[in-house]
Length: 281
Image (cartoon, rainbow, N blue to C red; front, side, top):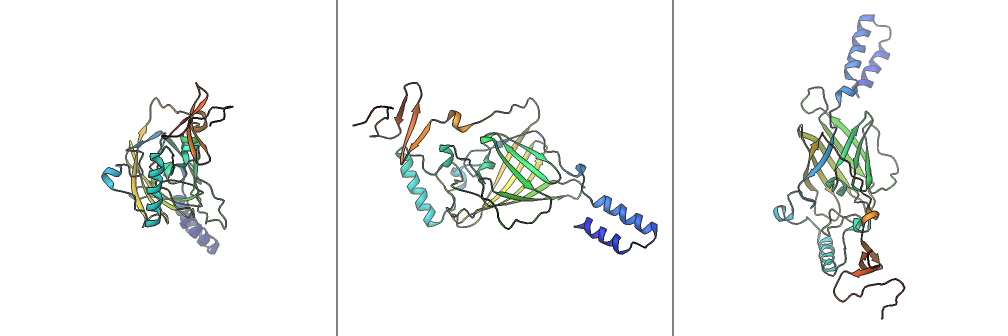
């Protein structure tokens, strides 16, 4: 905003002295962002803490702040899971985790910063987020995606001339989605909004303050997810869910694929195995 304001001043004083014009141009040059103003977030970032949505685990933080309706759904999911049905965990069938669960990072992530877009690339399902930092407004229509549509803004919190915090708002997130693998699902209306503040705590530690606003919750749910940086001997591991996934859902029934014997094994008591070409009595 400051850059465009100064340009307007230059246009309005086109007949001023060369000294004044030179002064204004110098201010514009200082205000304009350059590659040097962005932080160094290179490397591989690994999750710190549990895969539960609160990194400390539910044992320490307590249960999810669910409404009565979604508490009932959660309890129903728990009963189904006792019977071998992986209810409330869409990635069990290889659907993407989506936002905000993507930021739990079952596998590490890489952050690539450019002046107009910051890319967050996760090895988990080869998920990628594009955080637009070019000052654009929200579009009239957002095509729903599991990772949503993200607008970001860089902040220089300590006024040292280097951006140190990226704030992000994400909307337009497609479902079905769960907050983690414990059976806590997000509202089916898919009107989730996720707010993030991403910054370094120290050179080796990043924190993402994630606020999830969703109608399945009684209010905004805030967690502080941290990541540790690896800068040497980095190994990126490809993860393709369908390649190693052994969970099979047929209608309302769940089975476990046994490649060696060529059968679908039962996942609950009283459930008969399925053998291709054989009709179960």
